[in-house]
Length: 142
Image (cartoon, rainbow, N blue to C red; front, side, top):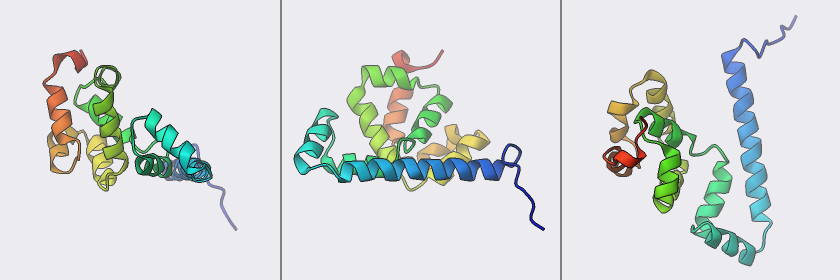
């Protein structure tokens, strides 16, 4: 006899469904960009001030590839919206760095455990930028 999984109460089940959804989104976006001609990809990447390779990498990573950056900024009391407004190029570079990061599991674990403020500098590719922003009163929360 099989048991039905209650996804509303099963944290692992919910995480798996979210992961499947993100993987599908990422695959769809990467496929859509891969079907574009080289000139269109170049124009789109130019519009966002990134290289065509970065554009493809970001599309493959999916729309949530830099979510850890936003969570890390909140944990460090840095207002991501203000950073995006005042330093758009820096914010874009930080997002690209985060989307390519191989330490996401460690980052998420530290964020969940409330340890990111003291631990992020050991693995985060955005450490220098984040520390510089922490010293900039115009982008701090509260």
